[in-house]
Length: 113
Image 1 (cartoon, rainbow, N blue to C red):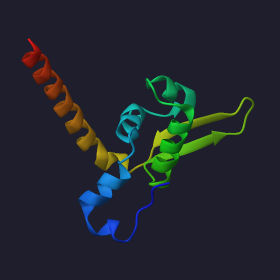
Image 2 (image 1 turned 180 degrees about the horizontal axis):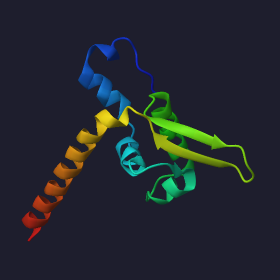
Image 3 (image 1 turned 30 degrees about the vertical axis):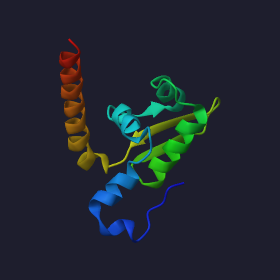
Image 4 (image 1 turned 60 degrees about the horizontal axis):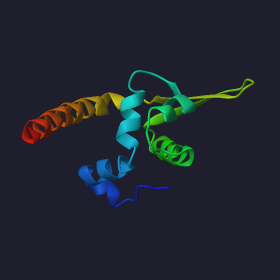
């Protein structure tokens, strides 16, 4: 599990990079932006992501307090993941990255022609 050290907390960019460093972190946050999602529903949104990798990534994001894990005590068991209040500051950045990614894709497609 990745943890922040006191040295990490001296530079905002280093902190952000470490918190969001997981291969799937930003995509998980993107998928959770519309509300809570159950584990298997989230897993189906990814091609090539294993059950254990998603679990590890969710635990890391939970450890960094970016997501909340809600366990419902029922049969069958139900667990939902949602974003915490910290998301409000992250969404403008996610939206900018999404816009940049779209423009980059368009540029790549126009170069291919």
